[in-house]
Image (cartoon, rainbow, N blue to C red; front, side, top):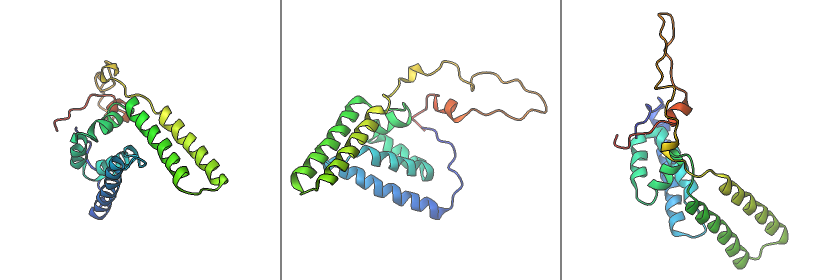
Length: 171
């Protein structure tokens, strides 16, 4: 993937972001192992910190066989596959069920947990499906020739236009 240049941030902040990325990646690994901890949100946060500090490490994360497709769908195709949604919803329900079964929980806490589970399921359900890259508009503002006048400022594409362009995964 090609990335815009990393914003000029101090090395201290960059290392802090790298530490946060490592922490959330560890939680994502736990999410892979434990049935009640979801991995996907922690992966998204990991990617967030890596893109802002060390984009090449984020590219390596995208190349991982288990995590890469989930992150690719989110970052490039702007959605989450149905199979990943089903797994996330099952994990939420399973975690809630195990909590009810193993721990004595007061009724008010059960109701609160039920409300949070329903909200979580609704959020997961509402995330869009990944769109096909072929569905992207054939002509974007980057493809259109811009009229130039000697006094005009250079024109730049909006972030939405840049996001709609196919990305090269080799760089």
